[in-house]
Length: 174
Image 1 (cartoon, rainbow, N blue to C red):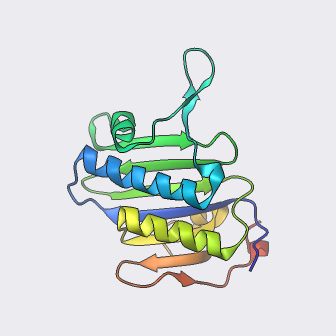
Image 2 (tube, helix red, strand yellow):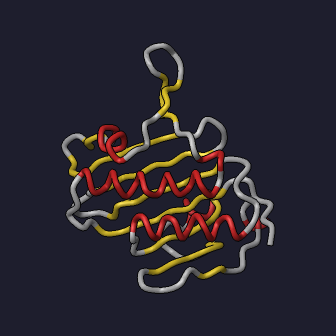
């Protein structure tokens, strides 16, 4: 089945497990490697924000590179990371928050994968890499309105269960 909406995301969330910065880096690197194998446009990632030369800098998405890129959240516990593929997708992770959910979000502003099988593969990659409590594929506008509910999910997952494909109407997105 083909979807016509142009603004979709995959979000994986889990409660903090007390993992190290290195553990998070390995999880993120594993996911990003898998996304590149699923969709070639996701094989190169750039740091969000311009470098000193005014150009975007290519991100090292190996576990060691990700570990170096994970930024402390100031006085708050945890780390964050934001990447862009230079085209239409971004990846953001906020991990290690002692009293909040960690999350990893793969977001397509335009030109998302068009078929259910690609999204199912991306969802499976997120589940393998992050072992989340929940994961969803939905439209940006529905995610913002229903961030902690299953409303408007195309694909959904609860820890220990199967990935479920739900009815989804792109007409409801706008």
